[in-house]
Image 1 (spheres, rainbow over the protein chains, first blue to last red):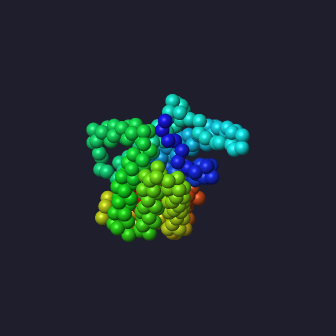
Image 2: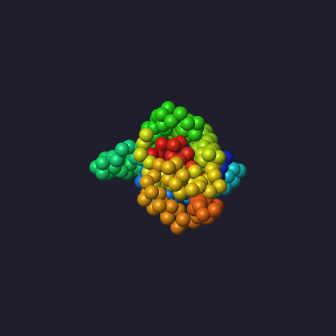
Image 3: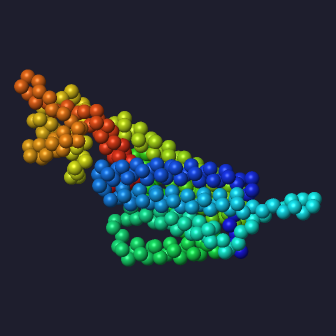
Length: 230
Length: 89
């Protein structure tokens, strides 16, 4: 039996709302990048949009899986004086396993695609190797959740470092705010690594992640506003 | 100075037109730093997409930006801001 739920019961549903908000922010930015690609045909826009779509898809899998776990598998048993509520899931539940696979796989593919945007033409063998390691991480992540968050954290550190470098080179306020937003999202992954220790880590990580994505949306909104002002 | 791409040139042309109420072809050509052939080709594309229109005043031809052209210029500016913040060049 693997542990599937890290959220305390009182936080059920609230984490889903946070993930739905993050999903919409990701879709919004992905849609904008696609429009940009239609105008300038720059392939980086396409990869960027794909990365954000993968991340959104990952959130969709997470939401659907957690929803299924929270609201269809909680079993209540009456034991005379008290009622016991417990999870009635087993490792064999194929739908849940497929849900977690989608969540891990698309999450890591999204981060890899985003990392790829900033690498000058990585070779095919490199991308193949990375995809293989992602599949390996997904497999290990199914056994222990923390492997997935640790790998996401490593990707995010590299991506945030790229945004910091972009800020120092461009000296733009938007680039600075974007780097800060990614720092917060990276920090949330660091907290996610420890969710096995205590369920409060899960709550904190979800809240920090929400702050990060809201900051990302704020920067995006600012970019659109600044563009119109020019 | 980096070489301008197609979108940079269109942005320069539309920006010039948005700053004035009508621009002469020769003025547009010099200000956009284009040859006559290049400018004619770009202008044909912009007219075809309804981003600019031609008018005549005292035997002179003027090029005006349309509402669609202004909207497209806004889109280009948003995109450039996005490109700069996310380092997408």
